[in-house]
Image 1: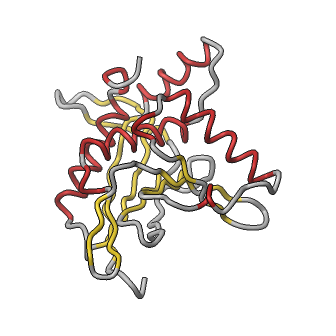
Image 2: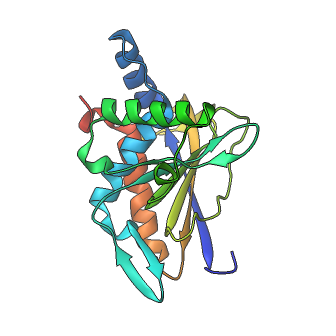
Length: 204
């Protein structure tokens, strides 16, 4: 917090189609977590908004070509952030398998320093806890971190003024304001939520 001016923006997304997609994979015998889906969604959204894949180092903005997603994983002893590298080149199943492997290494105390470094963007999924909103702190020198809260059923007013009950979640995106302005961050968050709400446009 001393090294960068941090700002957080939030938005709400409908989880209905993402829940259905996960069930579709489960029916095919493929077990995916929502975190797996969020990692790949982040990779797609960052590819569409490469200005998010940057950091400020020694007064210079560094633009990364590879999209390396760090994921916060808590244990009874400490918080770890394993990194799935080159997410842009991996499909959803490959991302899922690599993340499971890294989590197993953490619990088996076999994770290496190389597997915990090199991230360009971080995700913190709090959906398994009774947490609606968290304002995450940047994982320096990355320029942004995204937190996803729990999913709750809420009354939603549709465009035609009808009211429906939908599973909604809150996303909080913290950015380094020395590197990113609010406008590109807002556009990225909108894209991330749009992919969440229309996953079949991006996943088979």
